[in-house]
Image (cartoon, rainbow, N blue to C red; front, side, top):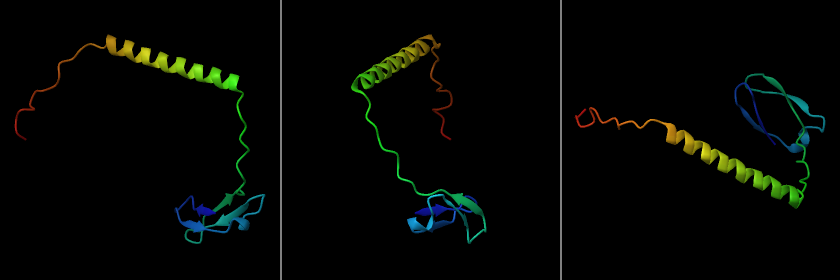
Length: 93
């Protein structure tokens, strides 16, 4: 397990079994900062989404993307056209 001091960014590589399941306070040997390190717990088990729910979510994503594109088109169409700023560009620095 890699620990990083939140105060001075010192890095420490320690064995996973040094931190008990309830976690532990540790102290940086460089700056003496003390902080709590939780146990390295395994990630939660992944669950599958019902295909019907997945389909509905995908439809919602499509609808949202189309709405955002339409919103950008409307904003772009309502902006006044401006001439490109070319003044002074033909002069050497």
